Image (tube, rainbow, N blue to C red; front, top):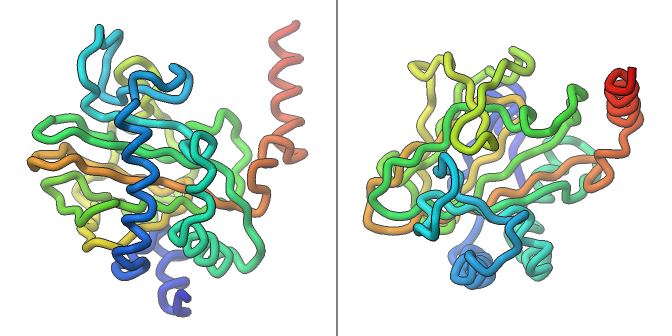
Length: 247
């Protein structure tokens, strides 16, 4: 369980590093389920897979930064793992109330490639302005260093609100071009470590310059869980946007 000091640090900085959150067996349990999905990456439905580093059609080239959206839909056993359970418990401790699963994705960065995940806020991907209190866990499936593309955060950036994001690559990837990267906190982790961050916290992962694939599973939890899109404020916002488009 998280200490009061850790919860205070999360509230202040917008992120928390938990270096010994999980045992090796819990990590192996997740990897044993995700690795087969990435082995058949090209055969998955096109709406759940992409190369985040691609600027357009890949013409069959191997992905440099392979992403699978909602892998727990493809293999529901992921939601029965110890890692999933522990992260949900930490989210409930941070939020002070029950939470549910809202989203997950996995990113496998190939060895020796220059693909970065640019500075961004996760809330920029939501498609609505209403901010819900969610907790985003980044779980590497091996030790990570700055050379392999560990997480980096700008502390306190969650207090700035939603920033302007441009688009990169094929238009899916969002990026804040003027992030104060000089203030970044680099977060290497041992096996079993993880990070958790606020949806407005600016974060980044660099290229994987090592000889191994950098594997990570990202899971989001919040009080509304998968029903977040039906939050009254979000529904009103979407209806208003639709009405504006019909005028």
